[in-house]
Length: 553
Image (tube, rainbow, N blue to C red; front, side, top):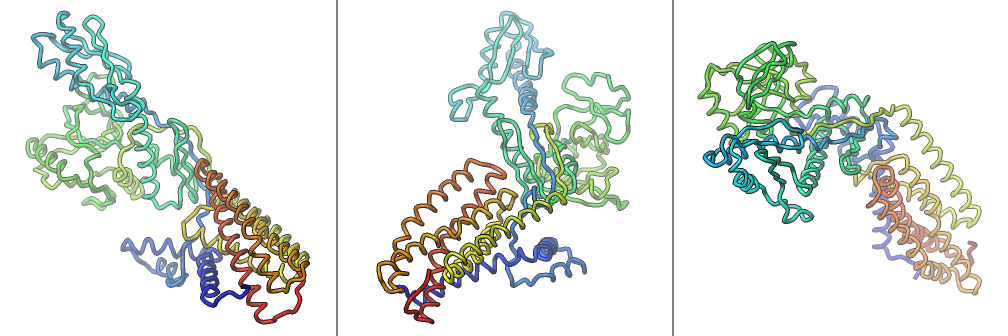
């Protein structure tokens, strides 16, 4: 029947009201955004008059979700970085040397003395003094290999070992390199995401591109250099025993040691044990603090295991210096005055408050497993983003007015009903985008413009079917009912195929393509809802009120 039951009418219009309420905050974007930012800060425990005023700028009982603006609309930083996975290969081989040395030294009566030879970073070369022990040395070192855990490398060893005379050459196997590269990229993605999220940026785009590259887009920042400074530090923190100091940059530190420059005093170098006592990976927390002189510093706390190890070391080495090393530079080299049992400490230096905060962020988020190379960097100004928004508004308004005029001229009163549903449709799209926290990009605006054009397709099919039914001398009520029934299959088929396309674009595409797919997919859902339910509800209410004998479509 044409009449729609009261419960269905209530559900339809309740859905419309909720959708428009969710979309409403986007009409007051600046106020709501300031309110949301202030509320985030207040929830951390901070509060002042400015924050309270910003928080009061939008009623708390109203929805406050916003459509996030993408890089091309808001402005911000665009970076393409490459992860130097070769660094991880070299680090693994460097750490593998003590194992090789120990296993060979255990059978010194067979293999003789063991020394490390100079070699490229991609290889580890070890020389034994007894030629007759070559076969045994090869067997022992191969026994240190571990199976690769990935599906593609199952059954393969993680190392390749060859013997040339009395020199063992150890390299990573191809299967282990692939597995290690995959882990490195995944870890880098997660650490980059944590670092950027820590500084409060909105909806950054961080995704893998190719085998070793990562795309980073951060809306709302003033310069790409801000992100480079945040990401350019690997933040590899270690606590190493100090063996001595020197002013000679070319002095050999000796086997098992490293030479690290002082971060503040030029020309000063420290001789450190290569193997650290604890590392930044053992940190449980790091945050901005101030030293006894009121200068910015970074307070840190180790996890339980590292705290015990650190406490034991300080107890056994009271009066000895130890170095806090960040990215191969000594940022502090204090003397151990007493036992430090709690696993807590403070890093001091000539920090500004901002530098100390950023260092705390880096330490909390963890060290990058490998150095990043910035291949492409650019800053998109907010003026360019505002131009895109203005152009998008004009496109939406022109498309909307053209559709409204066409429908009113073509279908009269029924066209006006469709126009009302079209306006509701656009509001529902923004309501859905807001509630899921989607990011709107310039291609996303194109998706909305396309949706506006497509939104009336279903109504056109329905109205043409009603015209056909009216020609068979059926009554107005029956003609309207049959028009909707017979148009249903065509509407569903057309929109399902388009929706499948949107899903494929979202799944396979990235960045702007994904943004276009999101708005297109949401637009299809809201278009079908408004065409089959909202427009029909309006016609039903009108028909029940006026009871016309004839209708013009």
